[in-house]
Length: 136
Image (tube, rainbow, N blue to C red; front, top):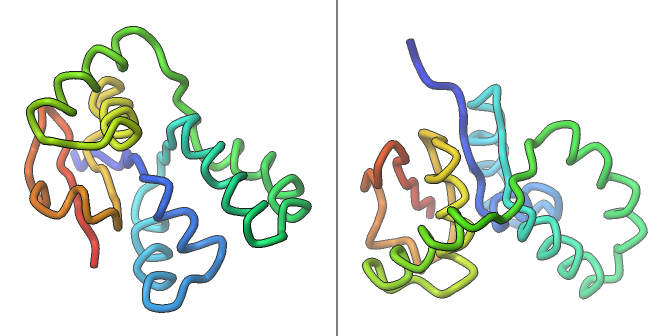
């Protein structure tokens, strides 16, 4: 049976919500592809900051409840933080990227989608149960 669970990096949701040219259609496709969707709690804060930067904070506040209904929001815990420290060291990832990826791996999501160039060298690599999909 196909595992229909996916974890999304912040930039996937930003591309979709803010209809970023050249990324919106790809983001829409991977968001529709899986029935069970998850985000890191860090992503919720990053999206909020992005909405402030572009003067659409009120829109974000209005859709925040919808995002919480569509996505399982994964909080940080000790296990995720420990895993992130190894990912940061082994794969030379920035701290926040390592925490977000560790959230996907620690919670056992099969797919991790990102537009972030920090993951370019990890495209189609499996770490434990999680396959990283670097999208261009």
